[in-house]
Amino acid sequence: MTARPTVLLCDDSRALRMLAAGQLEEAGFQVAGEAGNGHDAVSQYQALKPDLVLLDLVMPECDGRQALAKILELDPQAKVVILSSLGAQSDIEECLRLGARSYLQKPIDPDAMERVLRDALA
Image (cartoon, rainbow, N blue to C red):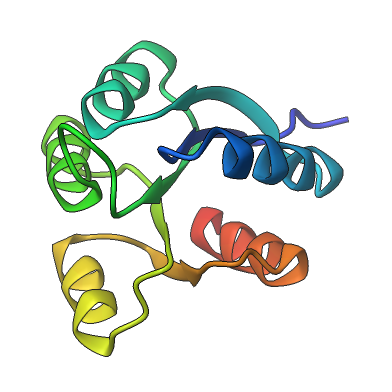
């Protein structure tokens, strides 16, 4: 049996992190850690070296765009998927241009999340 891919879950909503963690576990992923702001996301990434990061855009202290840039600066091969309620095409295009592998819209559709995350890891 191969190891389950590890995910760092970054969102300022504890309720969303709990919901997403359950959905990730059901889909065969392992939640390696959680972060409630961008600074924690970057430090957790450094400490845990997860296979993938699921990153909210709107977070306190350091937003998702800043965290994305810092994570990719630390590790240009990092696989980051943006998860956000912001759905403007300009937001999506900016994140992809910055280096995100994909973009998921809130509320989370578990099937879409699993598909997008598996594609990001491939």
